[in-house]
Length: 576
Image (cartoon, rainbow, N blue to C red; front, side, top):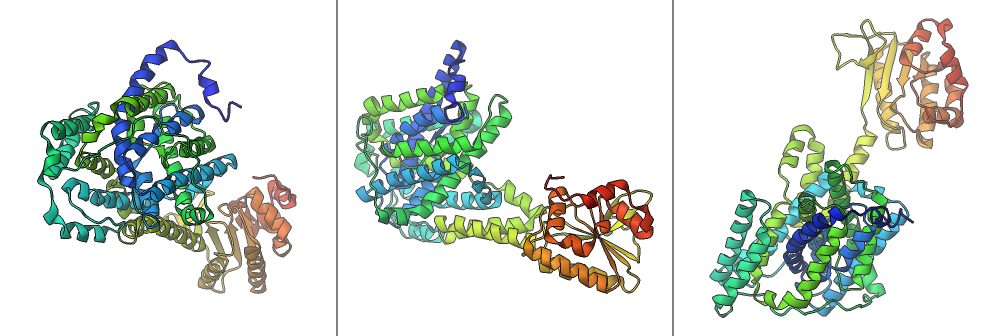
């Protein structure tokens, strides 16, 4: 029971001195959550009030089911971008159909996350590599920044999820720029950036919101064409079952799966970062999936769109001294107060001010140092990053992440099908055998003995590569070669295709009058060697624990060790 309801662990031990810390932290996060929620709803293409709805029930559910005490969940830039990209082609933004689909999307995302969590399948997120996430995030951030130009300029600029189209649309409509909107937007950007540099504790976003409202109200800027948020419904969201249809499920499930994985990846990344900073934090990856899934599912019944953990608000939560998830409850209270009593004040909030908040927030998602470092030490992964980045920019946000995943999987397949294959030699005056090209001066290479190391599992994808490379090494040795030792310590698995290949390779080597040895195989690999029939062609006396023993036996067959004899006789699946 405690595993699925983590609050049962900390609630009975809640201390009085925690209350003030949680209160201050919760209110601090709430002050940021309210304008951010409204801004991110605008990114999605929803009325701003839906950002507040997404800050209620999901936050409440996570407070009781989440394993991180400091993580702040709710509307975030990344998920908002993905929702906009996924639904933009299916319905008109701000329409009733679009709103219904965004809410149903939250239900589907939650259902997928909950199912994955219960089935303990959080490992699936590993297929979203860091280069893919980095390239996608940076590309999506640039698109969302340019998509906000219509609010920043106060111009009627058609939207798009393609960077080049956004640029062309913006250039075509520059003449419609409203000077007052532009001044408000630029001022908002400068205030947020400068205040953060001066003191990160200053609620710069709240200041921009308040100043924007005051400027529009007292200077009557609506009369000059400044666009404002307008009427926001008062009160809590009504309970409403999301609109279900087979057609919606079929059209939405790809973006739902993407959101489920990306949202989880964001949350677990934040949770692990908090865990490193605060030793009292202990993150359960599968329970986080359950918590996020339940938050999204139940939130959808109260008109929420998909949510996950926020980098910025979680950092603020930690800095403000959050002790438990009670702090999230205080954030919810602030949202409730806003919905009941403060929504009339937001009528005069200029869209340009919200655009400035969004643009500064998503600019922080663009990571320059990481691709620079990849360019220096791993150009293959840099290529994956750039493919994802450019695909996101010019093909589309949804398509970009799929292209990136495909590129990273292709790179993984290529690497496993062409793994490192080294020729080894004996380090002088030692029992160590290392790559002859890394230790050219200090290594002894024998003409009558070839020692190789294959640094990957043997499977159908690299079986032919193994065979061709091995015979390339053998042929290079010439007629003096009498023995081949395969150092198998890095081979953790051999599939049926590779098994058949290895048996035929050993047979062909024997036909050439050359003896074949296997050394260093771990327990599971030895089990395969015995059970698959490889041992019948190899013979037990040619299976060794270490290379040095295989070499000693090659030089003097009477030198077999007792350990080698035990290894040759074992065939149980007991590990190493």
